Image (cartoon, rainbow, N blue to C red; front, side):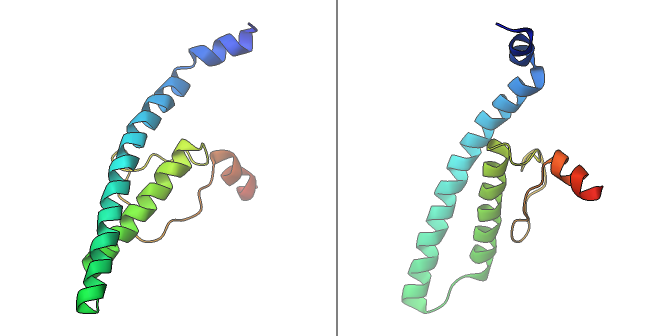
Length: 107
């Protein structure tokens, strides 16, 4: 093995990201289940009452954005760590930027 590969294998930051990715995979699964329950409940509300619940719609938007943030982090498209290590998302997701992209745009 070359020295670069050995150094990469010993990189603590990469292993820590891997640990965070496992944690976020668990949170993703839970969020997906909750979002699916909201979807079914909202459909039933619309079917039987003709209207949806605003609070559930906002929660669904937050969960959708949260799932998006998790997937962006796990795909290495973002270095931002979503909730619980970052803030809970509000509103629609913003496009993710890597640090290298942000620096090149600032120049």
